[in-house]
Amino acid sequence: MELLEKELYEELTGNILPFWIDKMQDTENGGFWGRIDGNNVFHKEANKGAILNARILWTYSSAYRIFKNPDYLKMAERAYHYILECFLDKECGGLYWELDYLGIPVNTKKQTYVQGFALYGFSEFYRATGKPEALEMAKQFFYLIEKYAYDPVNGGYFEAFTRDWQPIEDMRLSEKDANEKKTMNTHLHVLESYTNLLRIRQDSEVKVAQQKLVRTFIDKIQDRNTNHLKLFFDENWVSKSGIISYGHDIEASWLLYEAAEVLNEPLLMEEIRQKSLEILEAALEGLQPDGSLIYESEGTHIDVERHWWVQAEAVAGLVYAYRSSGDKKYLNKAKDCWGYIQKHLIDRKSGEWYWSVGAHGNRNFSEDKAGFWKCPYHNSRMCMCLRNHGFHMFHPMANK
Image: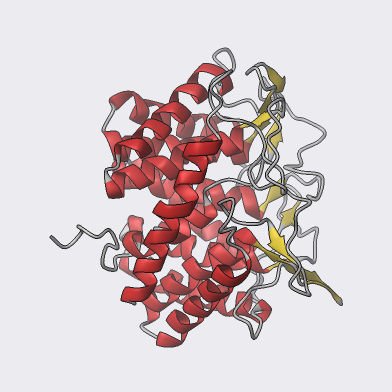
């Protein structure tokens, strides 16, 4: 365990966090550059995504909260102020989806997914700094999600809206997603944002919303026959896809456990502890002999690519499973997956991680090193998982 702690700490503070500090700050137009491609080429005129900026806010707020490095605080503050200045829709509320490189909105749709990440970032910034205005922003985004996205008839949250929160035809997060009214992915990240809000504000409205969300996962999203999570739904919770996403399964397994933990209800906690392990075991159907976790499958089609974020979530999920069960097999699998990451995914020359590795060990240079979806969130969170999961803090001064 001590070696794993040390290696994760060194990866976080020696590679991932410095990469974004040194290479991604847009000193010309504010905020952060929109893209570095897989060949480490800057694209200074690339559009800027709200997801990237909200995830930077969460990452560096969390890192500062744990390690108290002032460089991390500067990054968190930079993200916080840029989001408020450029991404925040001061007229209709919520964050715009996308800006051009100058900070001008080019896609004003309101994706519930990104409103959840904004809440996640604001609440973590408050945890790190204690600034009242950050708490107010977190509260505002909770009420905004509940006001506009919540489905009072069938429960759960609708996927996307126009700028002024009217129904929209194209609700997809990306081109690869199904155009459906409700998705597992959006519910997962609203769940984690409400978990973080409850850490700083034990408000009855937030607790009720979180209780409903947890039950939605167990009653609507988890497939009772396979324990995998269904991904896309119509408004009546009819499943519209047969895809199995191993990364989302394992990510949900530990985020659900966290969600129940902050509610502090013993009966619910025990139920979710069992459900969490069921979902994790289903995800491990995609685990390979080399310790990695493949991407997804649908019927007989299997996508064996090893994506960076899936491996990061595998380590975090397995560490959490060890914590909740005490079974060392999960810790050993986490170490195996970390070994795969060290060998195949970390770019030790230019920094950060490659997007993915193919079936034959070939690294994917066609996708971004940093960009709209390639953010310091999954891998940084993995590196901080031992600290946040109640193990010994892996900062060198933690026990002094």
